[in-house]
Length: 575
Image (tube, rainbow, N blue to C red; front, side):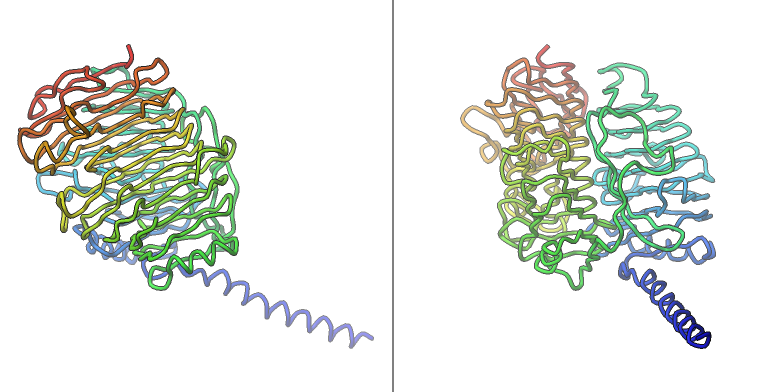
């Protein structure tokens, strides 16, 4: 009997030892592909720095390049310098920023000469802390960049040596020292805290910011909103001590201010990595992604360019699609690149939609109608970026259409390219950037530029926009080619339909940079004249010596002067 028991025990031991390697192997087999580089604190600083420098040397000047990278830091302390180039995302893998500490520096450096950062696009950092060995973190950026869930144990500046910059976005972040905005043209900060903010230019918006700067619009041009009415923070990748990866899905929060990770993690739920299909651009298509979505999987898009010849259909509530390293969906179909059903709780984050030459009616469509309500569990888009042209001929009639009620957009740049490859009035054709049909849609950080008709057209009721930045198209060949109708010059940048009964927007900057003379816009903003359609803090600017904007909103506000010598402002409309 004892021998039998011993044999059974021996068999159990053998089984356990046989299974342990398989479990370990399973954990180790999370394959993010060659363009995701994972750093461990046991690695030497020299080894890590060499990898960082290799990526930066590849991406520093690759404004329209094809490579995409994500640099991931496991929890621990690192003594490295992190420059961030194009199509690069740097992420900490802790439950909060304080689990990954960089002692050294983090910086985005000016791409153009003369310390000019106005083309510093397509890059982001998330979820780690920095102790700057220099005087400050230099985050000199413009559109399509994010600074999320960060802890800066010192100061930071939003420019390089007082050169121009045209950003930007900061959220769920703590800066222990001073944020110096310098000549940064515009900026939005949401759910952030700092010791001090200095500087202003055209349009600075603070939503749910602890200790915002003193002063009132228009001098300085500060817009302060005490609380964020509703938001779900961006999902993020994390890893525990056992090496198990998961995705943290933050909870919906209402009427919030300041960052939310002081207790050690962001409130929410954790989804194991086994619930995600890890997509690769060299093998996956819309069809393979749709197959995985139909199986109930979420999608983790690793860095790369995914050519879509069909539409990605998101039909399951609470689906999570999370991009890494500016994962790019190139829309090479005459249909939408992605369609989300009229369902609860979908999040799409960190994805760049790039128009191909097929000229679809829309690049991304959210919801099918505006009948159902999603108040308690809305669809949320974070850092979802759109591009028409620049990397080649691109065409799309509309970039983003939102039909679902209660949708939240948390930072987007919707861009018809004004420079790059095959850019021109007859090449990268695109009528409208954003069309909103849904009711009660909320947008934080709305950047829309250069579309050939309306940049934004809002049909739904109850819409809210916190910060708007827009440049009109540079390239109308003449006034006759750019008119919304008889007696109207151009197309308003921000248009609210005459049938809308309620709408509100805060902190809006609308600029003209016409390449040819004698081209004007009648109104930067057009909206119905009704008490519940309200606007706060609008500025118009004419950059250069050509044309300009005749009025700020609905025939009032006055004309811009050339070379930024006169920038009309409206404090409140209606007064």
